[in-house]
Image (cartoon, rainbow, N blue to C red; front, side, top):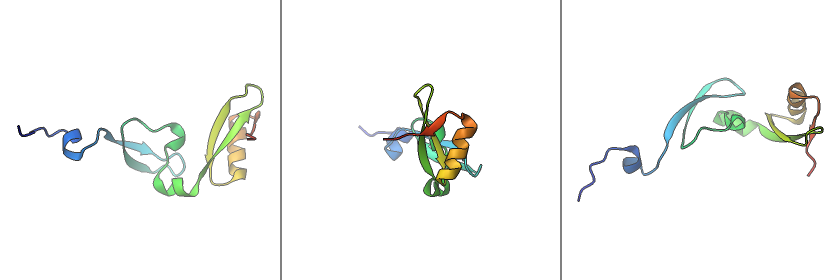
Length: 92
């Protein structure tokens, strides 16, 4: 029997869709093919993903971890302190 389906899963061999996002660093629009939406920390374009890192901070009062994306340690610390002054670098 010949398959006459024209759905994306049959023609391209994968399940998902093209999603549009705005980069959280440079605020440019970009597209990516994913099954599920990207988490907030990963919504960066390819050029910003190459030049930034994810730093982990710990809240001293609650003990919860918060991830901050920045190009260097100083900028990550400033962004973390803007979120909450109780955030400190996570020590492994």
